[in-house]
Length: 129
Image 1: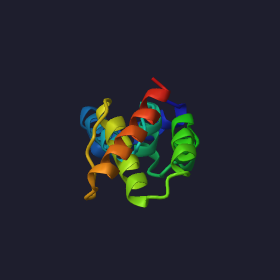
Image 2: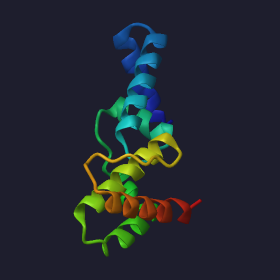
Image 3: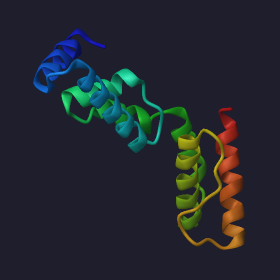
């Protein structure tokens, strides 16, 4: 945590009137932000995000530029079936969130499309395992 964040925390705790209640609120809010993001972010970034109240653009830039996302985009750019591409991205996001492969889809896919999506997801998932 940065010194400026410590000063912000002290101001916030003074407003709330209870340091423990302020800590609880900040941790719950940071966890809520973590659930919204597609990748794991360091807790100190999340706490900074809660204290400052701004969406840090450098975090989102780092998410888009990480090796897994670049590799996934390189593979999926050759797939012309948009339903399969969307299904792979959806399943990958859920797999990251659950920390294991999850084969669920947000759309109605035919059997061959679902099989393709599963194969692509496995290729992407095990590339960085």
